[in-house]
Length: 412
Image 1 (cartoon, rainbow, N blue to C red):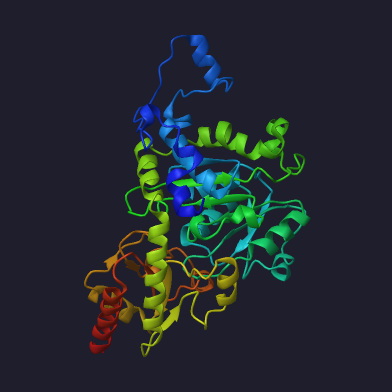
Image 2: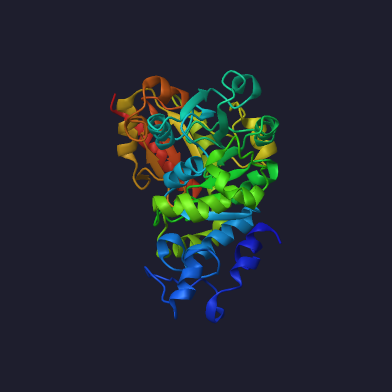
């Protein structure tokens, strides 16, 4: 099956009770048992079943299974947010004294997380790009993971997954990627060598801006060295699945980062139209970027533009999909605010991946805690506007942004 068909007719969406076409919403805290013995077996993971929604729920399982099938993963664990997923994915395998290598152009919330991990004895090294010559500057015997975004938000730096995963695997460490901005419709990172994939499913997977959630997917292919990763040593009998089993039965349970059943259900609903939305969003974003690039006084960053440094990798690895995010600079913070305030129907909001187009001034919001150097490395300046393009008619989007820019210029 091709992906749009698979979104509706995959193996994992044909098992619902009463032959329903969508998973029922099990909006409960606990599940009853006929005997204490039966309940004990479930708590000991010696029998299938559900005991308490913090540690498992059929609606959440249905969501996890559908994403896992799309990503061709061994399994997945849904979390209460994308940031929860990033946090748990790292803490599941790291200990105090371990080190991470990542890029300096990450989403602002993830940058803040790495600062917090320093307090737990986990050090992060930032490089300008995940390429061997940069990775070599910081790789040492304490390095335990390479982390990066497949397409960074909003810098739009594209990771060459094949080369980075090869580098990591030669040194016995995994590659964890955040694929939020690209989705399984555009790319399957596991097929290219990634070991663990994360989505903030609040974004394109959900698609309507109605649920906060995240998901961690394990390829089940990485061969864990349990001396190098002692956090997984109690699960060594599971071999390549040690990461997934610990995640599901230990760390995720104990941190309480569970997703609500109703939000899982809303994500399943959104997932079914993922392909249609991504096609329209990419078409709109390309049209808007091209129009803005012809506007005097405006500098645009979008992957399909010939001027973008990752244009070629976009064509090869992402099959020409530029994504739904673009950013543009207008000359000053004052003009950026005036442009945003002059928009007639584009919404000023901090999310991405919504059906409606959203715009934001990232320096004063998402990167408010970052230094000027950190913000610049992430492609964020005082005059930057980030746009998450929706599914409106592209002509209306172009007209709205052009009139807003014109209005901001007229005030000078």
